[in-house]
Image 1 (cartoon, rainbow, N blue to C red):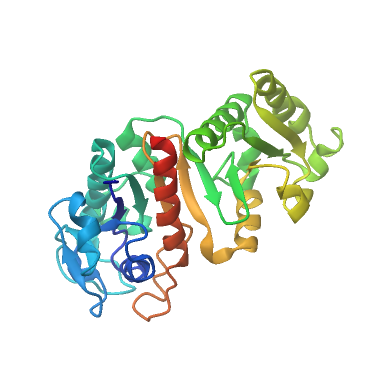
Image 2: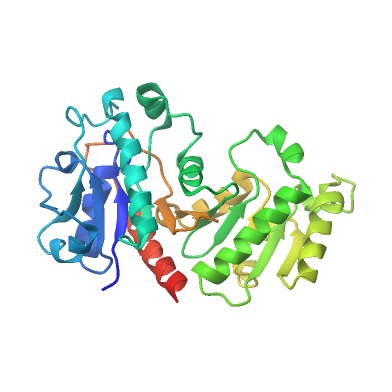
Length: 323
């Protein structure tokens, strides 16, 4: 029997418990998964099936949301993170990693965390989920992919000021991002010879150096080097012509140079079904492409679409990796 996907609880005061319940209702047995967290945090109208081990998740899903229980102090107050619960959120992530690395879980899907709440309540020193997962896995370099029904895109630089991007965009950094992306497309997306389109940094991809020289001095030399290694790479392209229908048909994934250059097209094409994927880990990790949404937590407004897609993609990637 295929192992289920582990879903960590994320911030209890956010929409994580609500979208987990919605995902269970939508998926049924299509994608077996189990929730790591406090059963009492799930919506009161949601049936819960506590399990002792991940192997019980598929059968338990017939009765309710399969939950591998992790007790939290206090109760859940939607919209108001409790610092006393921060350590439990961190423990849920660590437990999920242990289970996926042992093979008890096929993949890891993470509900959104509230970074300030974790820092305030537990001294969480990592910038976010991704960095903590990389540390737990002992990996130095990872890459973030945003995957939707119509586009996969990887930003070479992520959560830094736009003014810092040119300094961060070194040949070594871009080369490693492209290698991680290529390897993941082969291993986790079952693409034997992936086609990757690469954006320029500047308007019109620098227009021959008139609008910037990063394309000439950094991007193009890296592409030339990796093409010689056998990768199918195109670019550097002007980013404003890369994401229309005809352009997207010519590649399997795009690598952008900075955060918004990557995320705007994904969220414009399909805002509710984007999935955050961490590339370069020794296990599959996905996450819904939204935050904790404290402002709507507990109000019955949260849509589970992105989490549903994240669970489905985690299962598909795990299958591809096994094969």
